[in-house]
Length: 521
Image 1: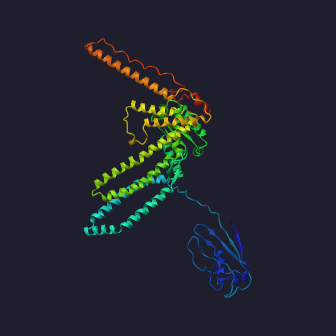
Image 2: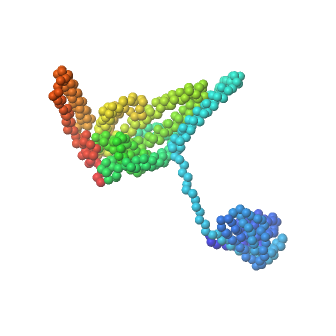
Image 3: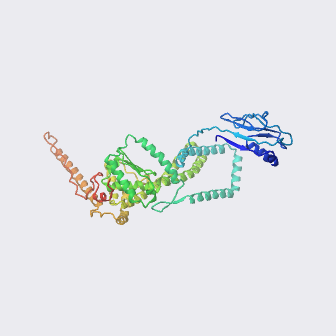
């Protein structure tokens, strides 16, 4: 505001008001008046603040000056220099108008950026080790305090606890009731499957965490991400967009902006973040045999994102860790030595890991296989290729000499159990596929083709091994003096039987069945 003019009415109007109202009106105009009965001194100040100058001038018929009523020093207060009329002690002498002029120069305000709080899951991950450390310190302090007590006080505390055992039991029961109410009020229904689950963290919090995680991955793989013009990137992006278009009836898919990043790395891995960021490694592209298997793998990873498995697993881990803190405190309080307490701490961590974390992780992986098979079926993929992929992974692990880990020690189901589960789900997936106006599948089952191919390879390997043994035995029976004996070259294995178009033909050669359904760019 450049100029504000306020005109007061004459003396009679001001005098007719109550004393409190007079003071309020005069103060609101920037005037400072002293006296409760009548206006003894009325000064219109000229404001001089630290940051700006504001002037208030009063014009009357007669001009005289008066000193300010008080000295003001803060930036919002002022030094007063006035020009006013002379008036009596009980009433104003004469009628006059007071015109107040207030000048406010323009000011520019500079505010700092908003401070954004850490997402709740990330904050929990940061505080998790601190909570464990505090539980250890608390338990150890309780143990040392108990040891330092005299025997008579220990006996007195035991007797007191026994007398108040019902109060302690009531307190424990109340705590259990509070925890039960907390768990019941945080139950949620899983999308697609309708399974009831515990969800402490909201999906909004995990979307914030997913954005942070995506930025970290993009920074980590910035030198390895292949160009968007690369055929491998275009293929993965085409399959992802096709899966999203064919599953628009699922709100968790239709509302997410899907984007693809292909990383040039031999790692056989792929994952999808809750915010729709798809990361595919070229090692996984080399592991799949055709586009149907690629569709199933991407459907599996997208199922993790749309169901919210990361939020669900973190919620369960949060509750289990809270209960573990109570047990951890008791371990460090009861164990007589730190070494025994550390051993109990380690055992407790392993029990939580093998009894809660890993079984629940295997359950979520099995659910992602089920939902991913449904997504692939609605995208008109040959769902029979899903079990074949896990059979390939089982054979690949055996050829690489990787040790076989028992399923109860792993976070994922075994390849054999995955194959069995998918075989049970194939009939339902085929019915779902036929209801989505998809092209007909070839009569030859990829599972039968793969099983026959594996049998031929095994027979060829056994024949080669037996031939090598015979050659070694013939050399040994000849006395070993065969300087002119030449071993025959190993025979090439028998060619694989011709299968349906695209089977075992590489991921970059899509089959006619799915190529009819995929949108062309």
